[in-house]
Length: 525
Figure 1: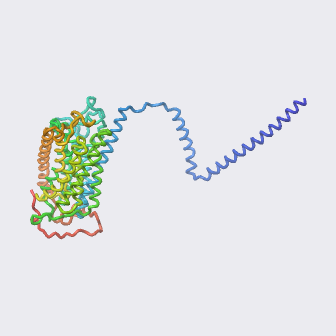
Figure 2: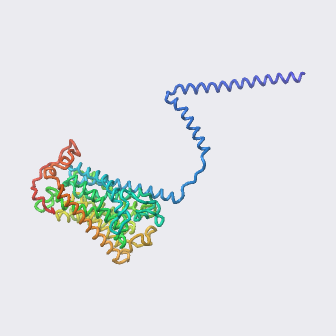
Figure 3: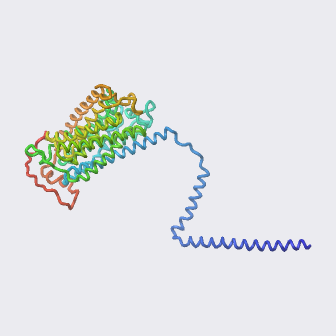
């Protein structure tokens, strides 16, 4: 009995201790709950309403994590397509940004009273190019057809199983089936190239062309002329069959745009007051700061223009082409600076700008097929050519306010011929094998064979572009008239064509000219 009594006493003592401990714990919990409730009450009603939603989200995530079944990752082939597509898209965006460069460059090189007109042309031209190239241009250029023209793929319609390549490809765009990216990526990249060809014309005809005529000509150029000659080369047409090579467009883009610009400038005639007593009268651009910015934007865009033409995320090819592109642009700027300094007496900024662009245009055809030393030589020669070309066209009475014909036409021809001089031949670079590039050039031990083919391409594309663009310009001249009135030109196209000013409230340029209309007729066709 005594043992039982003592056991009960110990149990009571233990229970009291446990009760006291539980009471202390419960008190702590209750105080924390009260503090939590107090904290919630201090929140705004909107935050209080979010708490249940947050709990549901956490519960949902937990359920999804438990219930989710493992999914197989993408294959190596799928990853390659994704990377290639990403690179092509980035390159296309860079080339698209070149439109801003053309805007700044051309506007800076032109006079203040025509700034709105130049900006308007460069802005609307890509919008028009997008529609024209989608509707008809891409099909004419890359659609299956014959050696002269594509006959399928208008409005991007028709069979296509891109990104399949080679024998696996089943569609109507066989000419571009070598690119392992979706059709939309192919179209986007080629579209920004087509838009570039149209912007080249804008600069050469600036300050005196009617806005509506420029719009119509741009549609005809991008929708018909550019795709036909492009089909000959990039659409596996007759020039491609003969072994003509133009990697990124010295001829396909730049020379075509340059020939069309030359004919436009010739049919328009010079700006009023440009040539007096058979002397060239300087008409300096109004803002060389934005012209320089435009040059830098274009230089940046060329890293999409040339390396992007690989249309695959090939690190060796992209890096090599980027270096050859940059070196040619740098060499062109240096040689143009020295040439202008010696020939004109001053290191003219406009010549420095055009020298850089000349080097970039010159290396565009060969950037994937040459070594770095050759790219330097190509750029150096292009920089010299552009300086003498600008003065040569002025002596002919062909007025080009921005030097577009000298940069894109002359140096585009030079760059195309340079392929036949310095191409290293297949087997030197991993991306440049048999049937994937030109034969050895003259200075690489290959003789005149490739040079002759390149010359054939220059003459053929040039002749066809001159013929068709002349037809377009003459038709516009006979129907709508391509040039603004003398009064509009003197006042400025900003007011005459658009009814607004680029620099409202700023001091205007003087309108005094001191010349007659007859004195500015040199060079008119």
